[in-house]
Image 1: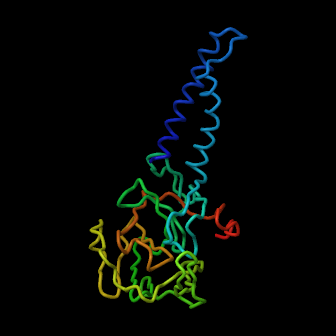
Image 2: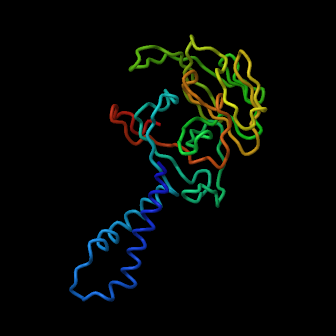
Length: 261
């Protein structure tokens, strides 16, 4: 469901009702006449829909985390806010950038349209920017020939499934984040897709090595062995970017999660 398109249509319909009433119909009604029900509802909803549309399209948009691919940074059920103007101002519905502000940087947590099905929104961490050579070999990440700093910390307990994953603190870009690895998971990438620019990637028994093409980004989940990401379906084109995640505003299962991102 394209909620942005539905909201845009509702905005046009309610706006047309409001404008028609304000410019034409109101002058034709008696002073003490009651507004028709469709005018009353349409005109009343227009300013509300307008505010929601502007906020959601240009400033901030809420999302709910549906999977565990970003554990331990984001948990299933987290409600997050995404900054829509961090990477530039885009026209709603068609998602075309009209004002360039910033570009995604390594380490950012970004929401984007899934390349294989743009009707779906995905969230992963930016690992590679245009021109980077990304090597994920034997579960170690190297960028442009430089292995990332990684420090082992206490194992992570998955409450729902009652098992432990190895947990590390990794420095990527200007920030540090936690990531998970499962000892029993293989290093190779099973069943990679035939995605655009696949010739930029080399798959082997240790993992994958890719060179990020211009205008694209390499994304990975923090739950490294339980994330279907750029290692499988390829690069995210710039036009698929939605915004940068920056805040957890609610979680029904754990109120302590609020503001923890």
